[in-house]
Length: 134
Image 1 (cartoon, one colour):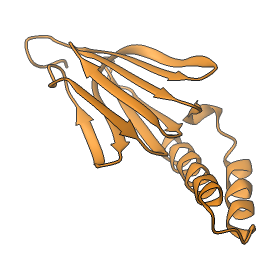
Image 2 (image 1 turned 90 degrees about the vertical axis):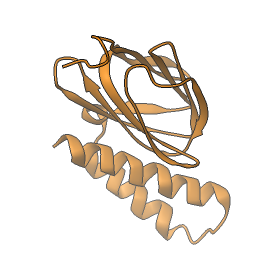
Image 3 (image 1 turned 180 degrees about the vertical axis):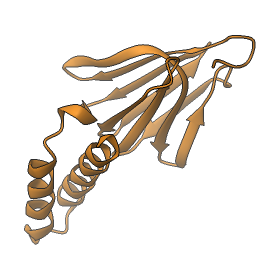
Image 4 (image 1 turned 135 degrees about the horizontal axis):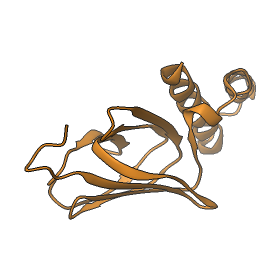
């Protein structure tokens, strides 16, 4: 399944408090400040800011792992992909009903500041990740 002469990506998804996921992959998709970016083996070196959203990892076994992440950084070099985020959750760790309640609470807070908008984006990302895994 790996292309480019058998090359694969070594991926690490790291939150501030733990290693969320680590393994080999054939593709990673993440949302940067410039838009979605797809990383394949032998990708050019890259350092970018990521925003609240969903990260998809296609493993060498053909599985798709989905995670919700907060803002952070994406680093790509020598077939190594590091995603560093304040908070990150794998889709199977997310309580979908609680995420929906968090979204409703964030939207109804009536606040229009950056923190309220960030809470809405975080809740939306958690919901998207959980729904994609079901």
